[in-house]
Each structure stands twice: as structure tokens, then as C-alpha cells.
Image (cartoon, rainbow, N blue to C red; front, side, top):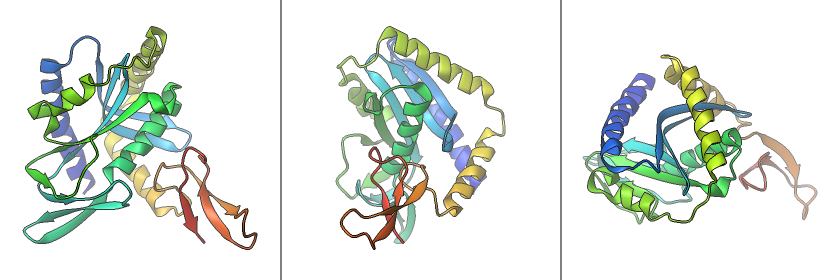
Length: 230
């Protein structure tokens, strides 16, 4: 399963690299398949685009069939020939990536744009927010989304610093980094003290309203408001 995920990510990366070279101009610096280290472990994302209009964190999914999901669901559903398969909500998955890059790059989280792109012959059967696209890179919707972001969010110094950090992160990546990251994710998934929304640690808290009500809350609160009943 891990090998299949890495192969799909690699082929998707090649597609994106080629098309990016045709459409994006020099205002955008593209980093593909980036793995970084944060205080909560490693974070790997398909594409990071740095520009004065902010940083675009792009998660790609190679899916066919019908896709059902909403912003608040833990998992989305893929339907192929009446068979259903669940996969992690890519918006939540990418939220973890953007939080990690905010920490790693020293850039405020609201200056990072989250974008999810579905490759493959799939069809959305649920209403999707404007940052979830289908075949967006090929049909130009991806570029329209990026180019519609016109507010200048990053200074020249911030852009240079972000690119420097990302270049160093890429230089540290080895051939086995994909396998290492998947193994780490499995360990974190098996650990019940890990926040499924942002990857932070879950800590025991007491309700202000009811002192007898204990629950687990994310250590990244108030940025992440995930809670879990005990």
C-alpha cells in the first residue's frame, strides 16, 4: 500500500512539473514532493508554490469514480462500480501540512493557501469548496485559482527565506524519505494521543463548565480546536 501511494505521488508529480513549466511565470517558485520536520514529526506535501501572493500548499489525489465528501467529515468516499472506498479528508490532511509549513517557514498560517487537486477520471457528487478542484491543472482552473490571489502577503525577504528553507529541506531528502514518512504516519495514526486534524498532541483537559467532564484537546489550541471524549 505504501509503495502504491509513493508511485502515484511520483507520477502525479511528474505531470505537475511538466504543466507548471508551461503556465506559471517567474513570480512563482515551485517545490515538488517536499518533506519537512516539525515539532510534531515529519510532514510531506506534493507541491509548495512560493510567491508574493502567499504560499500555496497543493495536495494531489489520483482518484477515479464518484467522490463524496464535505469539509467537516473525517473521511471522504470513493465509489467505483458500486464499491465504496474511504480515504482521509484531503482538506484536513492539507490543514496539517499548512500548519507544519507555517511553523517550519516562520510564516503566519493565514498567508498559506490550501489547495486540493483531484487527478483521474472522477466526478464530484458533493458540493466542494473553491479550493478543491477536479482535473484543475489540465483545464486551467488550477491556474485561475492561483492567479486570482492578488493580495500581496509576503515581502521579498520572506520569499527568499522560505525558498532557502525549502531548498535545504529538499537537499536533505533521501531516496527512502517516502517510505520513512509513511512509516512515521502509521506510528502516529496508531498513537491515540495524536490529533487527527493537525498532527499535534492531544492533552487531557477539564471543561470550564463542568469540572467532572474530562476530555482530550489539541495542544495547538486555539489554532486547532479538535476535541475527543474520554
